[in-house]
Image (cartoon, rainbow, N blue to C red; front, side, top):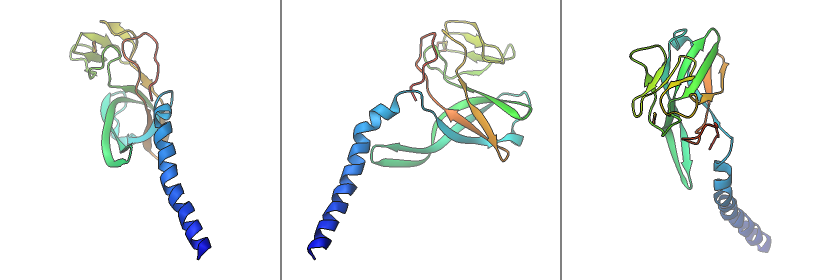
Length: 161
Ligand code: FES
């Protein structure tokens, strides 16, 4: 009986200790270079050479709360043969949403008139850098994107996770 009580106490302490430690180290894990691989779309749903905006949907844990299938953001995807290029839709200037340019091939931010060519290179406007590219991979005909966010308003592309 005594062993049962001690064992039960140890399990109880572990049940409290593990989430507590995770909570304490969470801010350190949140910053930095790490992205998150998210299933984006089937490769055959991407017309070759045609940019497509795709929502990044995944489960999201915030402390004790787990939300299922949350839209974490979005990306622009362009299929190039069997490869896929990806960029964040977040403007590197101040974070507005990047759209397709109506007057030229490429991308445009309406907030302060930054424009980017079809490869994501900065053309005009105050954006301090090119569009933020993201890693992709294709597995069994499905495109996955390593989704990340980046610091805004600076020339260097610095991931904030
Ligand atoms: S937020 Fe895009 S140009 Fe300013």
